[in-house]
Image 1 (cartoon, one colour):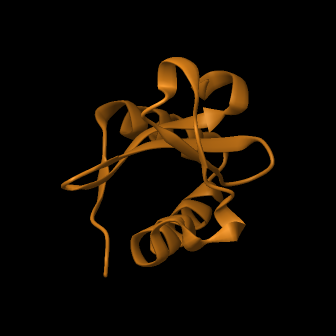
Image 2 (tube, one colour; image 1 turned 45 degrees about the horizontal axis):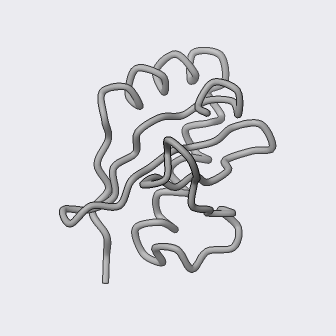
Length: 90
C-alpha cells in the first residue's frame, strides 16, 4: 500500500532555506520519501523513531548524521512537519 506524503508550510520554508546551502539534500529527501511512502516504518535505513514529551504524537527520521525530519501520521497520510539539524527541530 502506498502512503500519501504531505508537506506543512513550516517544513517547506525550512527546506527552501536548507537547499540553498546544501542542494544535495534534495536527492536525500526524495529517496527518503520514496522509502517512507512505500515501506512506511519498515525501513531501517531511515532510523524512524517515535518522539517523547511535548512531541509524543510525532516521529523523526535521519537524512544525514546531522539532519532530521519530523513528521506525523494521520488518516490522510504522513505530514512532513519540520526539517533541520537536531537542535533546530527538537
